[in-house]
Length: 74
Image 1 (cartoon, rainbow, N blue to C red):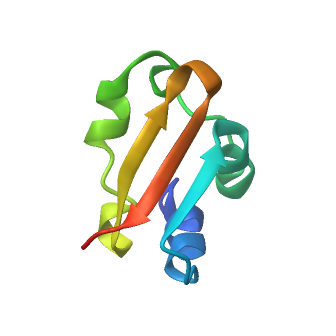
Image 2: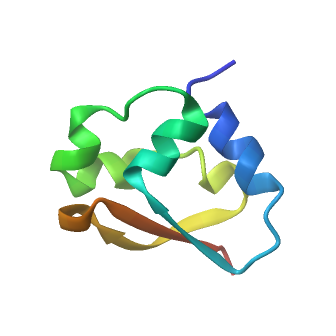
C-alpha cells in the first residue's frame, strides 16, 4: 500500500464537487505527517499524482494557512 492510498480511497468515495482539507486532516487520513516540502513549496503539491489518479485536481492551495481545496477534474 502506498503512503497516499488512504487519501485516494477517501477521495474516491466523495460525491461533492470540491473539498477543502487542512494539512492536518490529510495527515490524519494517511496516518503520518506530510513531508516538510508540502509546507514549504508549491512544487510538492504540483508533483503529487495521488488525487489526479482518482479524478481530483488542486483548485486552491493556501500554504500559509495550511489548507488545500481539491475539485473534480472536468
